[in-house]
Each structure stands twice: as structure tokens, then as C-alpha cells.
Amino acid sequence: MAGLRAAEALRWEGFSGKLTLIGDEPYAPYDRPPLSKQVLAGRLPIEHTTLPVLMHLDAQWLLGVPARRLDTQRRQVVLANGQAIDFDYLLIATGTRARPWHDAEEATLDGVCLVRNRADALCLRDKLAARPRRVLIVGGGFIGCEVASVCRDLDLAVTVVERGPAPLGGALGKTIGNIVADRMREYGVDLRPNLVVSALEGNANHQLCGAQLSDGSTIEADVAVIALGAIRNVEWLYKTNLSADERGVICDTYCRALDDSGQVIENIFVAGDVARWPHPLYNYDRHLLAVEHWGNAVEQAETAAHNMLKPSFDYRPHTHLPNFWSSQFGASIKSVGLPTVADEVVITQASFGMRRFTAVYGRQGKTVAAVAFNAGQMLPSYQRLIEESAPFPPDLHASDGPGKVEPQAAGFPTAGHPRYDTGAEPNVVT
Image (cartoon, rainbow, N blue to C red; front, top):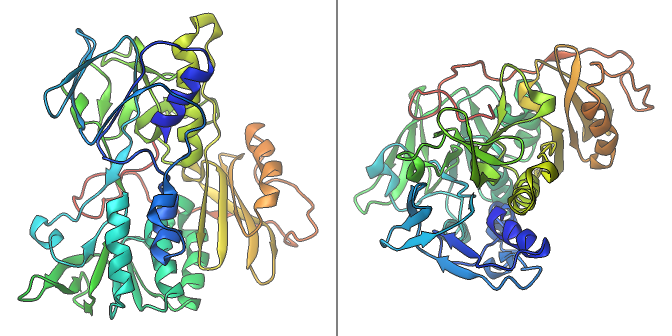
């Protein structure tokens, strides 16, 4: 997404030179969000996820061969097949990949699936179409919850095992996550919070047949979906002088990459899921954002393309306010701002027995984010509060607001909370 939109922006802004797009997958750029929703449910053919090219690019496409090394002195990207691609300006938009199951042998069991690319989605769609007895989902983040929702729509038995106290707890916090948990159970999900999968088990035919949980219980399952978050694709940059590690590639507010001493590299830019950058609204103790959302990938790519072609006095800062959306269990969930930095949350509007509600997040007395369930039309108003760093809790006097505003602890994992598989720090927005 980021690479394609940057290429279009370069042409739109008047660039007429040689343009090369490198991608490790063999397909033309495609939209990922439908993979865990409409594609799995069989409502959208996989071919229809291909992204439209909005203008003639006149570009060289090098697909199916990943980048393996960056030579900043020679200004070359070296591919896995040994081919070296020269550049004057480079945009790094290598994104993320799904975190695999930690046991390599167990990960190869027939029935163990990821959901990240088109091949993953096709494989899992076929598994679900075969009507498994039970689907086990390891991880209760957005991908895990969306897949669980599709399974219930298909009337499949599904168990979600989540290490934290509530689904979506890492993204929305425990307080709102508990509301999500209630909704999931209403839809028939067997939700197992505060547990981990200790081992996946296979039969003599190397077919998944179940799993062991950390409380000593076992689950029978024919399919397991590993939904443990993402790994940023930065390994090919480790032998360069770029400031890059497992959290992403650091860039400045103009999307220019920084070297390991913090200096700007004028001809290398970064955009999309792999980027870490400073945001004026969330500049807490040198806090850097790394956002894995569709809208940010598009806007950051366009900003990077603009700045590649302009003199420094005409640079445009990337100040995109993070936002995301998800569709699951009869709810359209939309968010603006950065909930994960909050220490408190409050329900500001609610109706229909919490089927529709809006929650606002605060940090140290300032409004930092808002999340709406089936009430997305209200978010533009909350976005203005966030951009103004309005006092928290906000005094809205909404007709569907609570009689008494009572903020609660947002309930996000504390710093150093162990990751599911390795015991290291979590891959969070930092």
C-alpha cells in the first residue's frame, strides 16, 4: 500500500525519472484488511483485493524477489538474487510480516495458519470451508478477533486464547476489552483469557488435532490461527548505519531516515508500518510512533514522496493522527488518536444497552484518543478535542451521556509485559 501510493504521488507531483518498485511477494499490490474478513467469509474473491492503480506509473516492477541488503555508500539495494538496483532516492516501505508460532516443528502441522498475505488467506479460507470441528485462535488482537467473528458467522466452533485479561486489551485496554469479551461470548466464542497455548499437538499424519494450555487443560482443534502480532521487516538494514531495530526504522517528522547517530540521511525516506517517527501530540519523553494502520501508510507515503521532490523549505511534516477501524461481532469499531498512551478511559456516550457507545481516553488530564462502537459518525468531533489536547474527561453534555462522568483505569499492559512467545518486551506502539 505505502509503496504504491508513494509511486503515484511521485508521478502526480511531476517526477519524470526512472521509478522502480521492489516487492517480495509475486503479486501486484493488494489490500490486506479484507483478508481477515470478507475473503475468509467467502464474500470476496481474492483477486478483488488487488489495489487500483490510480494513474499511469511508467515504472519498473521487480516482484517476487525481496531486498536483502542496502548499500548506502554505493546507493544500491541488493536483491536476494544478487541483482543490485541503483537509486538516487530510496523509500523504505517494507512493512511487517506475521509473527510465526515459536516452535518450528509445531508450526508445520497441517492446520496451523497465519493471516497476513494472500496465500495465508486462501489457505485458511479452504480450511474453514472444510468445516473443522473447532478453530483455535492464538491471540486476541484485532486479527484474532476478526477471524473469530468470521468463524461464528460460518457457524464454526471457535476458541480464542489470549494471554492478557481481555481481547483487544493491547489496543484498547482492559476496560474496553472487557466489553468486547462480553460481546464475543454472546456470539458463542469460547474465550480463554489469562492463558497461553503451551504446545500444539499433531497426530500420526502430522495433522493438528489439539493444543495444551498453560492451566493444564487441553483443546481439540483441527485448525489453529496464529495471531500473535507482527514483526517489522528490518533485518536487511542491520548492517547499514541506519537507526533501525526490531521496533522499526526511525525517521524525522519529514519521513527522512536517521542514521545511528541521529543525523538525517537526506536521500532515504521511510513510510508505512516499518516507520517510527515523532508526533507533536504524543511527544512524551522522546516517544516515537510506529503505526500499523491503513490510513497512516497512505498519508505517510504521500508525504515522503512530496518531500523527496521538494527543497527543504517546502517540506511537509507528517502529522497524521492515527486511526483504525475493524468489523467484528456485529460491531463497527473505529478509533482516532492513540489509546495505548492513555492512563484513563471514560464512556461519554452510550445507547441500546452498550450496543452503541463512544469511549474517550486521557493521559495526565489531556484527551488523547477516542473509540466508537457503531457510532463512527461522532469521531470527527472527538478528533478536534484530541488535536486541541482538550481537558480530560471532556465536558460534553451529550443527550446520551452518563449521568455522572466516572473515568476508569484504561488497563493497558505495563512496560515490560512479556510477549506471548519469547518473554521479551511486547511489540507495541512506542
